[in-house]
Image 1: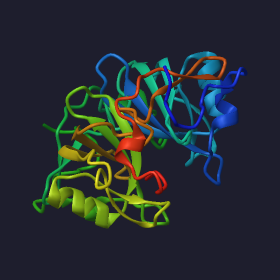
Image 2: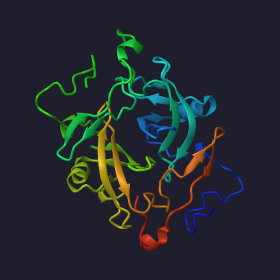
Image 3: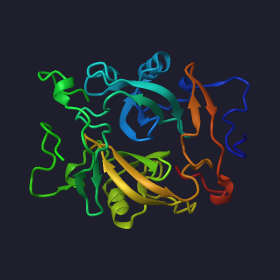
Length: 148
Length: 148
């Protein structure tokens, strides 16, 4: 397949590598969307740096960069709600990643399958639209702040 | 439904409003995921400011903030590939939006239905995985830079 007159993404003989293409923000991060590979539900949004992307690609488990903890974040390391990677995709501008995963438990630290459990009505009203799938206090230590 | 022991998102009598809850970045923007409401495919990722969100909610057509043009961006205004809003969602931290839409044509300025038309293999190799759905040169003026 050919993208026509578009920039030659794959005309070169050398394969394109994500770490060469990736456009990072000034702090080295890339917005990352996480989608359930089976139901296609959007589970969460997070940030990756090179280390997180490399860990994700080599281990097959989703890793992110936690901005609040300023550290590599193996999703599910505390809760057991890990994400097994099915596919990683890169957007047209090479500045956003999409990770399609098999999610154990729930992705959201507030107990929901997806972080996007609230709807916004046309008048701006925000309402909870989903049911929680787990009790956060049973999977996170009560004395510890919830992970981001 | 009740979120159990979670912070009381909806215990107050006054309805929660998105513009009160929304946590914007230092430049007033909020990461926004756009998903096809029918196929659940992730179509694109963009940024909204308050003006874009207000326009999206009041017109029912997706609007964003174009960082490259530093202006409100009515998606599809040039290409005709508009996005009719089916649902807007807000994430747990109130700092990411999800817009579920009915997409005309393709969301990607490079001619693909989705901006995420490239896969990243475990070894970092990037390959085009989708077929284009339109020719960009037929929907964008050739003398004009592609919209973001």
